[in-house]
Image 1 (cartoon, rainbow, N blue to C red):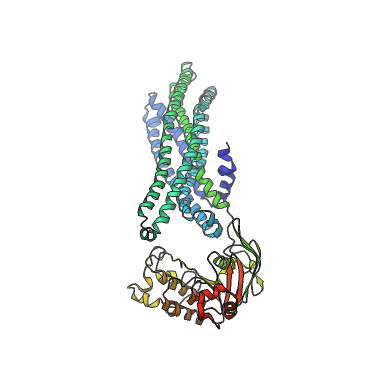
Image 2: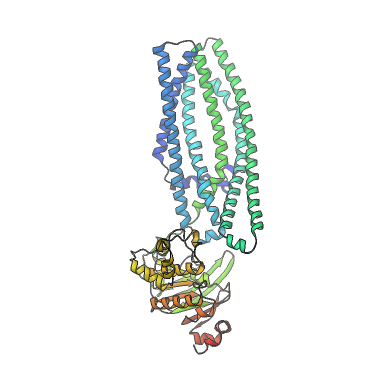
Amino acid sequence: MERVFGKDRGSMGSFFRMLQKARLPYLWILAYIAITALLTNVGISVTEYTAELFAGNVNFGTVVLPFLAFTLLSQLISSVSKIMSNLCVARIDRNIRKMIWSKTVRLPLRYYEKNKPKEMISRITTDITAISQLIMQVFVAILTSAYTLVITLGKIGSYDQKLMIALIAVLPLNLVIAFVMGKMKFGVLDLVNQKNAELTQTIAEKTNNLLLIKSYGKEEKELQTGQEKMKGFYKSSILNAWLGFATPMYALVGAMQFIVIVMVGRSFYSSGALTLTQWIAYYGFAVNIVNQLSAYCVYWTTFKGSQGATRRVAQIMEEMEEDIENGEHVEHLCGDIELREVDFSYEDKLLFDKLNLKIPAGRMTALIGPSGSGKTTLLNLVERMYPVSGGKILFGGEDTARYSLKSFRSEISYVTQESTLFAGTIRDNILFGIKREVTDEELEKACTDAEIMDFIREQPEGFQADVGEQGEKLSGGQKQRIAFARALLKQSDYLFMDEATAAMDIRGKDQVWKSVKRHMEGKTVLMVAHDRQTVQKADYIIVMHNGKIICQGEPAEVYAENTYYRELIGSEGQGR
């Protein structure tokens, strides 16, 4: 039972808490249950009129005509019931996907350091489908089947109470098989879903990096890697297929039940307790009850089979998300950036220990140092992409923790080295995140300042040219220029750059830096840089090493004190 309700294997508590947030289509589900209940009552009448016909009563007005009417009505209601079921499944899938996607974009970056982002594709597609099936084909089906059992047993009891009790006594024969097979189904389907997620993650990752694979001649290796993942998924699917042997076992137990049911009914009929019509109707009702009980066995195996999917989705919903709205709304950031006694760790690795640093406002500050010094992490901490373990980060003497993440981040422009783009047009990517109306003149000026306007004019579609998935149709430098144009349009007083011109040529860097200086005059620029050309644009230098500040100050001061800086910019740095 631990695998069913145990916390480590998938808590039902977390599952139902997730459903409370999913805004299930309860009215549609209730409508489906009501229609199914109506179908049950109509089915009772169909069975009784069928028994009359088998008993030889063929009166057209009292038997044949009602039989035809109730049969037609049963088929119509059954069709409506199936449509309602499909509508409920579609709405459940839609609502849960919306919920999971909303959760996904609000999870902190640290979640994705511990979990593979591309595996989320399987969570939002395959696992969500398993949840809707669980709701409609198990939980709701149990309710409708229970109603059918009660109504049918009540009808049999109206013939003879002893007959009803005798029938109940022989029903539970196949529950043990259902329990065992359900336990097996859970383990196997959990493995299938996990292998499917791994395969999805591998394919998505490799197809996005085909250039790297081809440039290093690793086609065969990655082909083998993909095939191994496919093989793992295949093996788990084959294992799942072998569970099909449960069907003959259910059939054998069902056949044994039918024999017992017939013998019980036959004895009542022989003793005169049942009329011929009641005996035939009893057999029809008994068959229906056995089918309902067999359905409960299917419900159990379906429940166990989907438990792994529900556990994984429920675990995502249990994760702590960023509350981007909580806190004061900041209208305008200003002043020096200060880190005061800041602690930060990556899992168990301490990176910053009581770090103190002041970044002057209104200047262009360069963060330099060997790889792994903590430069990019420092940028991310200042923009509150990660929460600090201890200490404070202040802007103009005000603790940034008091501000809402949404309003705080909107005051900062951040250009990364990767300059990630989304599939869509150039215009869509430049205006991404811009919360004001941008005129065509502003857009063209920003693109001119970012040295991308000439390229756009060369495109037949202009700003409507498609950039491809993740900007694959553009060069690295072009993507960085688009990111710069976006940053310039944001018009923030703080601009963060993480090797943001690394993919540009020398002329492109000079032109972009001229635009940055013009647009950010009197404003604060904080940049991570490793090349001399970029570092020389700064008028304030901070040197980092192993999470510590080694040296900081005016370029001339740092040049005199720090060997790393002198080696980076060479003799051209003297006198600065």
